[in-house]
Amino acid sequence: MTLESSILNNLKKLPEAMQQAVLWYTEFLVNRITQQGTSQLETVPEALSNKRGGLGIWKSKIWIADDFDAPLDNFQEYM
Image: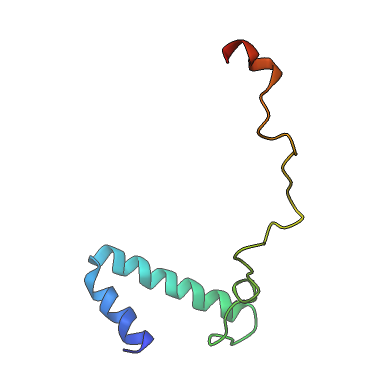
């Protein structure tokens, strides 16, 4: 099944009001690309293609104190 046929099949399942919203959104996307002076409808936006994720993305950006699990002095009376 092609991408276009998948989109059309899902579109047919939506109520008419939502189909209208999808139409407006696709028109917005096309207008946004054409206003930029490029015809890059086939390319992935740079923000999505450079997206990095997964394990290790916070390495060396956060830290946890060595005594993280140590009891706090302020709560001694509750223990």
